[in-house]
Image (cartoon, rainbow, N blue to C red; front, side, top):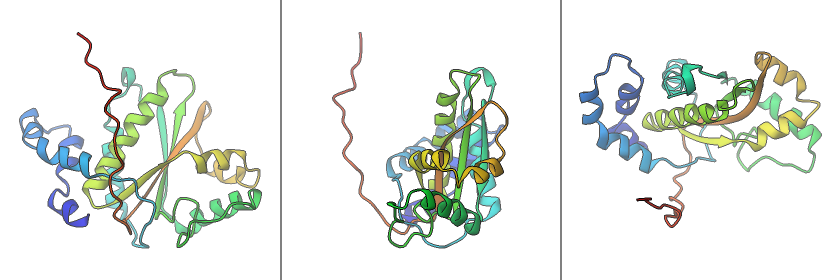
Length: 208
């Protein structure tokens, strides 16, 4: 997995994030982009290796350069890369959900990820959830191109919002008024190499 990532490291990020990149260069990188897309897997086991702030910044920059409706950028991001804080959030959720248990080897409810991006959508814009999806895909693909795994996670966010013990931590995230904590993306260096799941193709139709 890392071998592939190092071969194409930075190519997708540079192609998609630079406002000065010309179209010809992006087209020349199409094969690398396709490799990243087809090789990406959802990762649920991570090493304890820290992701540098510079790397996180590059990944997030790719995220916010995703297309978005009316150029409104109707989302907010909160990045938590402090293992202590992630554990505190997890402990609060587990306190109110005693039937839950952590995945073996994980120290938080985000599969032991070293960083988590929390994404909130502007509830005053009816297409903001679509924009948040586009944002998330850019983050995931950029991370993968750098050898970093990810997993979109909605269930932990749902539990956080239902947990009274977690309310102070949601407040600490500091989303603006009118923004809803929608989902999260776990990030970390992979400690597994899962196979691709079969993809259904019978739901694709060309209409002529």
